[in-house]
Image 1 (cartoon, rainbow, N blue to C red):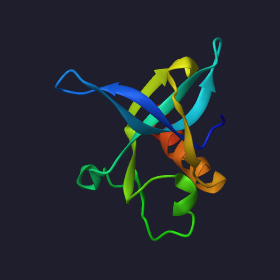
Image 2 (image 1 turned 135 degrees about the vertical axis):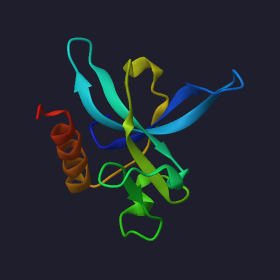
Image 3 (image 1 turned 60 degrees about the vertical axis):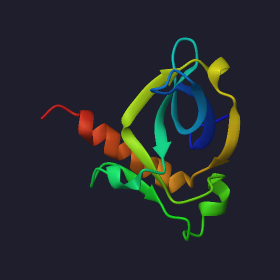
Length: 112
């Protein structure tokens, strides 16, 4: 697994069930090599302009994502997850898109 991979992780739901949900691996974290990741959702109406990123199903790279329909990379939905909890990789995003996302996140957390 590497940064830019789209993986499945178990996430608890409001009804106490656990479902496999897609997430984007952003960066491996020291010292235990856990992963900083962000959620991916089909609830595109939740998009935060200038922050989240839409993965549109008609994009030339979309088949490589492993996603089934237009989805939203939610940079505001971050988590650090032990790699043992990652079920597996279903796809990836282009390196250039990953760089843009990391830059957006970096710009956001920079002190003013």
